[in-house]
Picture 1 (cartoon, rainbow, N blue to C red):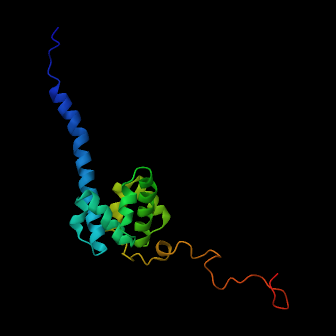
Picture 2 (cartoon, rainbow, N blue to C red; picture 1 turned 120 degrees about the vertical axis):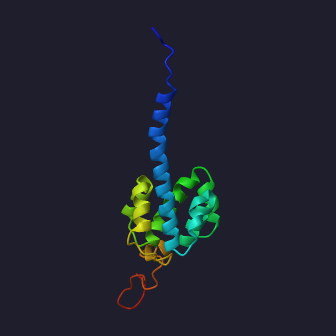
Picture 3 (cartoon, helix red, strand yellow; picture 1 turned 180 degrees about the vertical axis):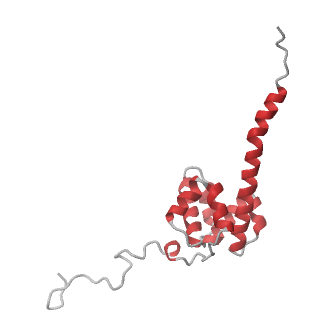
Length: 153
């Protein structure tokens, strides 16, 4: 029996079967992020620079640049990255469901954001800018209850 068969071509085929789809998805993500940045009036080439693209996303949603530090710190970055994705979808007029899509299926939802009909609203989107608008603590018209003589109860 001859056990000296060359398996290098089999390994090359397996490698290419995983590598080519990975490259296609990566190119799709970069092009989609490029188009999303251009919709917001930012340079599209920023999508290909790893940490700078996060800084540009922070500028798009209108948060301070200290968020870059929070997005890079371990453990804290999970919360701030999801929050950043939520604010990004809100800045384009999308809902929380779209944020879940950006988080779990980015290769589908970033192209929808970049090539779809979503318009950039900006950080002035109501939910993105003031998340505490509907609470009783910020409402100046929320007066304490009074009795008939006008005194507080």
